[in-house]
Each structure stands twice: as structure tokens, then as C-alpha cells.
Length: 164
Image (cartoon, rainbow, N blue to C red):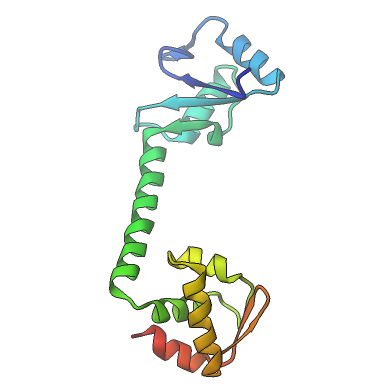
């Protein structure tokens, strides 16, 4: 059996401001059986909140997070592409040691509770590379390494390196 159902809105659930006959009953029965229901629209004119409000008004109680429209998809896709461009820029134009120093400083604490693998994933590199570089930082007295933790000992040096 399906875990969930996706319904197109205009013409499938309603037409204009009229509910399609029995659409509310079908959706209620699906929800009562513990299945997820999501509504889809390719119209960017209304917000997810607008669609949820309209469905609720027509007798199908709906939360905005149960509605996906083209604006929502493009916004999330745009954010994903933006993050990818930033990562590509960092990998292509900044040295790993500078990126690592910046990542440690951006953690907001002198005690960074992350594994080498988590840091490597964030930097888009291999764990072994991060471990070697952290070992160099430790040998210079800039950090102290512990299991799943990096303690920052010399923020000034890390900040200087991160600006290179």
C-alpha cells in the first residue's frame, strides 16, 4: 500500500471555489488510514499558506507544509544551487587549511564538537585530509584534538590563516 498520496489541486480537488464532489471524503479516509496527503500546484500566484487556507475553507483541513507549489520548489532549488556555488568557490579558490580554520572559527565556540568526518563532509573533502591538517594545527599549538572534539587554543593564528 502507498505511504502517501499527492493530489493536484486545480481540477482534481477543486475547480475555482467549488470542491470536486467527494474529494473531502476521499482525503479524510486516506488520512484516517494513516497515510500522508500532499497537495501540488504549478501556479506560483498563491502562497502555500493561501492554498492551505482555501482547502481548509472548502472543508479539507490543511497545513501550509502539506502544500507544494512551484514557488516553493524553485526557492528550495535556488538555495541548493547557491550552496553548491559557494562550496565550489571555496574548493576552487581557497586552500584547505584556510577553509578548515574558517570552519573551526565559525563553529562559535572554542570547543568544536564534531568528528573529523563531519568536518570533512562540510568542507567537501576526505576525512584523512582533514585529520592530517588538524594534526598540523595541533603541532603548531593552534588546536588540541580529542575524540569528536577540537579545542581552539590560538584563535588569532586561525583567524590569520582563514583570511589567506
